[in-house]
Amino acid sequence: MEYRQLYYFVCIAREKSFSQAAEKIRVSQSSLSRTVQCIEDEYNVQLINRTTRSFKLTPAGRKLLERGERVVKEFEELQKYLQGYSANDMGEIRLGIPSVLNTVMAPLFMPVFNKEYPEVKLYFTVEGSHLIQKEILEGMLDVGLVIRPVDERHFDVKEIIEDRLAVMVPESHPLAGRKNVGIEELKEEKFILLDSTYQLFTNVHQMCRDAGFEPNIIHCSPSWDYIAALVSLAQGISILPRPITPYVGRGVVAVPLRGELAKWTVVAITKKGTKVSASVKNLIKHLVRSYK
Figure 1: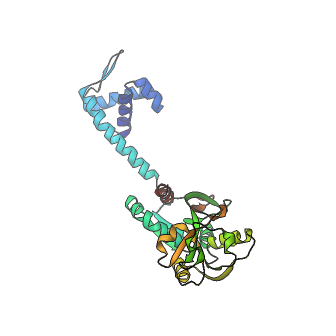
Figure 2: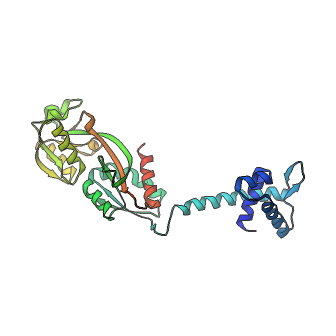
Figure 3: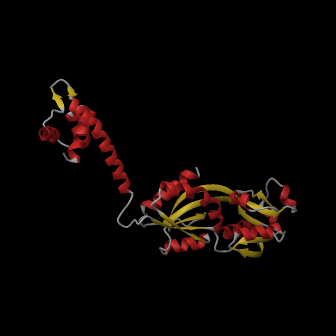
C-alpha cells in the first residue's frame, strides 16, 4: 500500500462518501473506487460495506482509518517542516543589530528562539543602523533590527516594537524630577550621543532642528553604556530609548521625551526583491510574537 492510496482511503472515510471525497481532493470517483479495491485485494480484507443507501466501515476499515489518520497527520506535519527549507537555506542567519537593541532584546528572544529552532545558527553583527542597512544591501547581512525611519524603496519592513525615547540626565540635574520633557527645553544642554552610524543620531539632530536649534554635541560614541557613565558623571545629557533605562546604572535618571518625533520604533528589515530564507522568516515571526 502506497501513501497516496492510504490518503485517498482516509479522505473517503472522513467524508463517508466516495463522491464528496472525489470533489474535495479533485480526484475522479472511479479512481477512488479502484484505490479501495486495490487495498482490499492486496490484504484480502473488506474495508467498506458498499450499499446504495449507506456508507459503513468494516472493523478492518475502522482500524485502517484510526491508524491512517495518524500517518496522514504526521506526513502533513513533515511536509510543512520541509517546506520551510530550500536548497539554498543552510539554517544560518546573519543578523545586524545596534548595541542598544542587543542589550534590550537579545536576552529576551534568544533563549526561546534557540529552543524552538535548535538547528539554526544565529550570527550577530553589532553596529549602527546605517551600517546595518548598507551591509544588507551589499548582501553581507540577511536581516537587520533597526529603528525608523527606513527607506522602504530598498527594504521590506516589519514592525517589531514601538516605544519612546527618554532624556538621560544625572540625578542632580534640574530635569531629573520631571514627568516628561520637550526637545525645545534642551536647547542649552550639552549632548552626548550615539555616533552618526546610528539612526538615533540622525533622529535627534532632526528633532532639534525642527525645534529651531542645533544641538550642542560635545561627544559621540558607539557605546551606550559609556555614554550613560558620562551622564552619571554630569558631563552632559543624552537621548536613548526608554527600554534601556533598567540597564543604565546608578546616577542616571530617564525622563520621557514628549512629542510625535520621540517615538522609537524597531523594525526588522530585509533587502527588497531578494529571496528570504525560511530561517529568517521564522526569526521575524518569532520577534513579532515576542513583542506583541
